[in-house]
Image: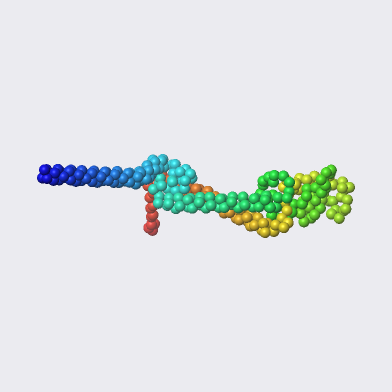
Length: 281
């Protein structure tokens, strides 16, 4: 009985070892299979960009020769790729750099524009009635130049009485309107002048109404920030415009270069040949 019991136990242990070994082999096989699949996927993912580049180059090479200048006008360097010219890299690099510069400066200009308009709305215009609507750039230029807009009319009812404070924007506009129609500035009652109505009409067309009024009194710090934001915005817009001009020039230069290359190739019967002769007397 003891021998039978020992034999039974040995058989049970052997069965467990066999099962464990088989399980280990299956796990190794599974890991190997997963590794092979991963390697295959990695190789496939690496080959995809190469295949895509090959397809793009093949498509460019199938373009007719005469279309190279048009391709370069659309994307600088593309026509040079079609013609097999190595300088396509210069055009593409210039295009990428200039586009990034244009986007960067445009974003910076827009950020500063939003900043100075918000300062004008929340600080300089806060004591004036209305919803403080946004408006054209020329208005903000005036806001930065004058401490105050002044009132549109010194009277809340009845006829319009123009602003007479020469230190305000509206006050200056009334002075200019009177000078334009020959109304003396030292006349106390200018309403009797025959040109008063014309001067008043000119003033009304130029003066700032209450909805767009402003004042920087007791807000000099905010005014300085406003002025600097306008300067930064103008500089960024100027740089963006310069980048845009350079982008257009890069397109034109690449197109002209491709056109000249096509003419040379056509004149040479498909090849560019350079010859020289030495006259013998």
